[in-house]
Amino acid sequence: MKIIETVAELRAWSREARRSEKATGKIVGLVPTMGALHEGHLSLVRAAKTDCQAVVVSIFVNPTQFGPNEDFSKYPRTFDADCALLATEGVDAVFAPQPQEIYQPAAATFVEVEGLSERLDGASRPGHFRGVATVVSKLFIAAEPDRAYFGQKDGAQVAVLRRMTADLLLPVELVVSPIVRESDGLAMSSRNRYLSPEERTQALVLSRSLETMQKAITAGERDSEALIATARASLATEPEVRIDYIAAVDWGTLLPVEKVVPGNLFAIAAWVGSTRLIDNFIVG
Ligand code: PAF
Image (cartoon, rainbow, N blue to C red):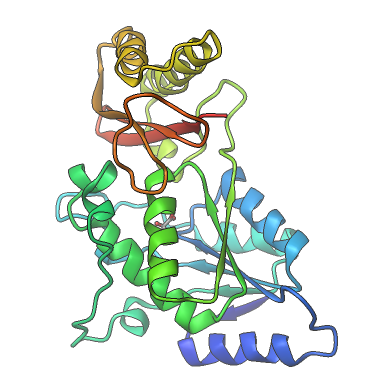
């Protein structure tokens, strides 16, 4: 597995993959990550390996998507363990740049997806989606992938990146993989490792409240206010967990819907201790 640190080397690697004798169809797959890999990331890697002839995983804790009081400095950095996992999965290359490779000291260009960037996580994390859209567009420009793989867990991020890719005419197909959960239902996240054993138990209320909503939908409820009230009641069973938002939205625009229809996104964000967790489901 090749470790790449510069954009020039990444672009050369991608173009070489395209030139190879075996190159037909979907050739280069990119899995953007911030490291601290878990089974959720590995599910994206496996999807990329199935679809593409050459797979690169980026590991970059992107400073511009963290707010001033957020966890950038304490975000888990587990590069050697991540590389060992990726080698086992048969990944071809890891792109691990230093921050100055991605953001030149005089950098003044950012990608802003208007409207969507202020909704859901964007409302409580101002600037977050600007940082995400900026880094992902840079990764697309540098790696020139045919396909890029993202997790449904970051449901609002998916909407922002779909809009950005379409608006900037980027020739990249976005592939979204389902949420991977622990056996007790907790959605996998690099931030789960911040949780104390007690908080880990409290955090289960997120997936439980989503299940309650799903059951209500299956029973015929379509009114989003009623469904959100169901989720609030369920979340209230863990009084230590503080709700950031519960929303039923159109997955394209992230705007609230009154009556839910298949394809809508039901998303929750909540604080468990000092850890902010998110979870969601797509109405089936
Ligand atoms: O989802 C993430 O881990 C990050 O937001 C991403 C897409 C790698 C950009 O830094």
